[in-house]
Image (cartoon, rainbow, N blue to C red; front, top):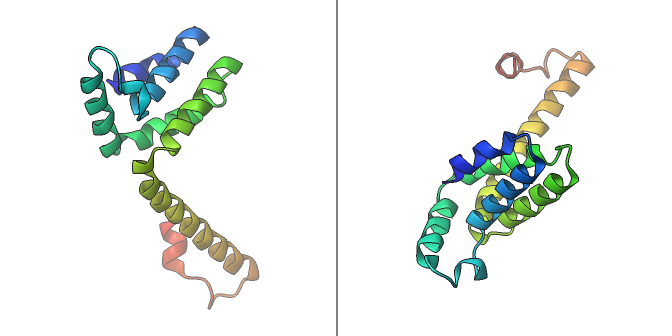
Length: 133
């Protein structure tokens, strides 16, 4: 269902983009929004399935791209949707792993840059330099 909603992110109308962002945040939310109403069990099951799946990572990236949208309303809804995904307890461990990997990549790149800047061939690992290209 979320892949169909993501197709509306590129719509020309900011209202449609905003509505699609709201729907994504509703799909990924947990708690009261699925606790009442007709079909709430199916929606809750779908929400739990999305939270167990790793596709939310790509959705979060697409939401982050929407933070640069020309419409203030769309940007606001994108931030709120990202907040829903970030505050979901089932995603915390994955975010920690992703953040740790990014920190390690940045640290390795900084070390390579420092080694290249110092010009010391003994400090430069050619395999690392080739892999980064």
